[in-house]
Length: 410
Image (cartoon, rainbow, N blue to C red; front, side):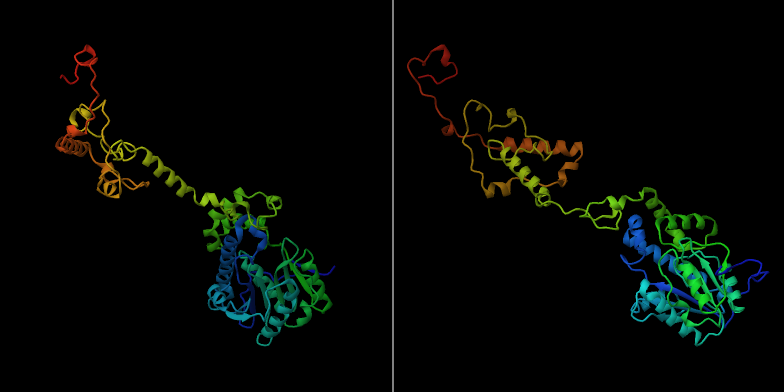
């Protein structure tokens, strides 16, 4: 058996706080949309996943900045190296240590941890504890117990549920080669790390009780359930309502059924909208032009738009009050020319749009007043000249006949 469990052999009594010679190293991949926690994109999308990763990192640094960890050397080992400003915002008061030209890829992680361990060990002779930023609610007692074992010359490791590990405490006699040859990002990572420690002559023990790091959508659900009682991560808790709503509509495996044209790794509801057809972009303009054509065909015979079509204004006065049309129902009247000046002087020719005209909200009293003004205007209009009325041809057979009643007498 490669290891022993920390149980009866672990330090008894209350956990001791970290000492000044100890070092606490949190490995951080600065969250970026589309690059952080990509396995969560199928449910939360890249931008919401970035917010979640940022909240978990900030809560992790805040939890281990005070209390039992206040006396230890606290280091934020981050990548990429050009994100120092964001790392300092997430880890205020922590020592910043950028990784050299690496982005926490599996092939480079062992080398990055080895280089950081050499740098830390040159100044700290106590226990060195490595943590990740994706287990924000890891109990502080786990860190204290592991650090106490490391002070006694025994390495301690806390396994993750997926086969990796969320915590590693190294004693002073652990060489930098303990990170060489470890199988990263697989279900054998913890076993591989324990085997490597044993090969380097370092005894190792495993903390009782594995913990969950946040790599899968189900891990987020488990985290939210734990936070309902622990309240350990206030920033993640603030996002809980939105995350739970996304989890409620998430369908596992649905991302595999997406057509090839869609973006892989993004939830269906987070897909960008499909580009509109060329005609769809001009649909509103076409409707406007059609409405204008209908309005042009609805003008009344005198060349004035009928206000009852779309304007909502009171209709014109009846023919009994309009001298222009009185007595001329059977005789066509000459139509005035309708040109730009007529349209400009016409008070009822409004622009054909969807806005509400000012007079559309008049009260009933105001509408009655407008109707009276319209009737007065029509009353003042001079009657049509008799010369413009076409005379009917007179024949001897029609003069004085009963059918010529109402006609002209000789």
